[in-house]
Length: 255
Image (cartoon, rainbow, N blue to C red):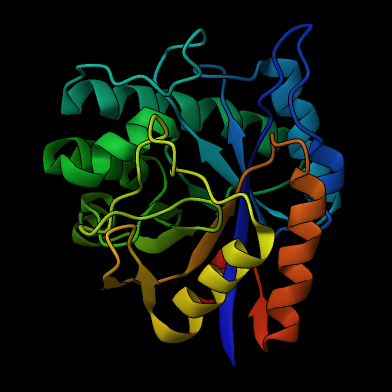
């Protein structure tokens, strides 16, 4: 039987603005990536989300992003590997304080948005992020896009890594995600999305938009928590994977 982790980005509310149905979606995932105030989130939201994750026995991860609240961390910024190192160390420290205050422990780090995508191809940036994670806590698991530079950098640094795949995103022939600016970036049919995940987990393959199959490693599956039907989709994918004889577990239990 194959095993996979289900992760979701949470804690993205800010001040008077509420985003996502965090409490409900935590019933169907095994790992939560919590925003740390740079691209989304604030101290109160971080504390509340950490408490919810601990109550539901969900693995807690740091979700460090670029310092771009207005752009939600999805716009590329010309930062150096040193700057990437600094912002990741800073955000790990911020979330870890809340986790420790609630009696829990951090499980992983998954960069957000543009920082994540830039580190797929930029080896120097990836190494800066991996070094930051290792120096703060070498027991943390580093998430990166399957086949990308971040996974390679994490392994080189001596970290446990998790190759991440996406349920609701399409892939390019080189293994990268289709840009969100493209019309075909998102998969909106939940059956198509889940079947893509099952094939990635069981066969290690995914069909690119160009029509060719590409090899892929699936340790953890990202589902987005901010869509209109995010909770319903999380429930559907978790139940369907189990029916397909794929067990769901925290990433720290099997990588």
